[in-house]
Image 1 (cartoon, rainbow, N blue to C red):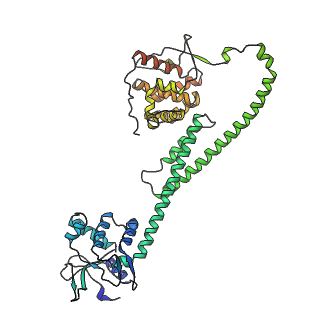
Image 2: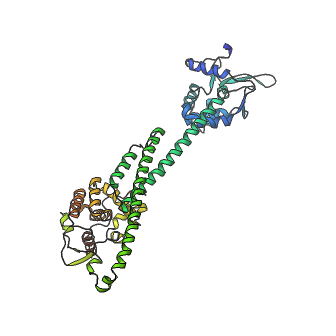
Image 3: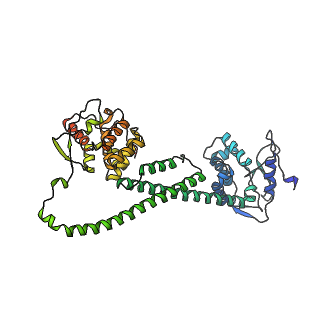
Amino acid sequence: MDSGRVTTPFGRRPMTLGLLASQIKAQKIEESSSVDKWKIYRALCQAKPLLDISDRALAVLNALLSFYPHNELSSERNLVVFPSNTQLSIRCHGMAEPTVRRHMAALVSAGLVIRKDSPNGKRYARKTRQGDISEAYGFSLAPLLARAAEIERLAEKVAAERLHVQLIKERLTLCRRDISKLISAAITEEAGGDWWRVQEAFHLILNKLPRVAPPHLIASVLAELEDLRTEILKRLETQIKTEDSSANDSQNERHIQITESESYLDSEARPESAEIEFTTVNSVNHADTMHAEDDASVTAENVIPRSVSLSTIIDYCPDIALYGPNARVRNWQDLIQATTLVSSMLQIGPSAYRQASAAMGPQNAAAVVACILQKGESVASPGGYLRSLARLAEQGRFNAWPMLAALRRNSVSGERGPQTPPYAPPPN
């Protein structure tokens, strides 16, 4: 090692082995080697997470490079630049001089520049009679040339990691969408199986992801979600095959029945009760204290079909539309998605919602939650209220029509409270 080419800091700044190592590495520059200064700077910007430097430090380095008169850093030229702190501050878009000095020290510590101090600590250059620089004191850019290949490798590594993270995030997004829509379809179409429990497992996996997750955690969650998606697809494929088989059998049976029962159809009229099922509606007590039995009780006065259409629910319970996708409910899937969100806002436990869906069906359960939201603060305990209705439905003593009809009557008569729900809708 040429000891004459080693420089120590001026003043109180101490000499460290790290600074010495940077100077030794900077001396190992191959002859006639060169690199485009802006190309190596762009590589540094990519590799900064691995070099532990900030964007402000890179802004100072950019200003230093602008003082180098050539586009290429070459071993055959002088690599020392000697701007004052005032000039650096101007080219750093007005950065304060103390901040410039702090980030310059960070660049020196990172081994990207070398401080070559003069005997009095000033930055200047001595020139020959021909105008060439014979000696310069300031900041040497030699480490950038010496570490060019290393910096480019680090930049490629960071770019590859970034691409890997982007790919697994894309796969995670697609997997989440697939699982969410498959579960919604299974619940809406009442496929066999405890799909609410599957949905709970889905949310438990997603809750493992913090707002800013490291790549290894994203990959781990993605593997769990892909396993869950595979299991869901297997269940649904089995369900579809079973339904297709049953449909083929029933089609053959229906063909035989029609052939054998033509005389019966011609000779006897079918009872009207076989055409459609009816239930009756009771006047619901809308006092401050409401009971589930009041919404389920029936009399023989009014007769209304059991089937509840989506348009009827939206017409009678307009507040639920605020919680659908883009504040709209266009189909049953949107309604179930909205009522799932509303049930968590009303502090209705997942088990209570599952019990209601199992007892009265997902569509009726969604209609009941929409009614509870529409009633607002008059329902003191939405979770207990829904459980009570679910128990009545298990006994065959409840359907959603009386609740909807009562809401409609009170809305028409003006007894309903404010038209906006007591819960703020989620932001779009």
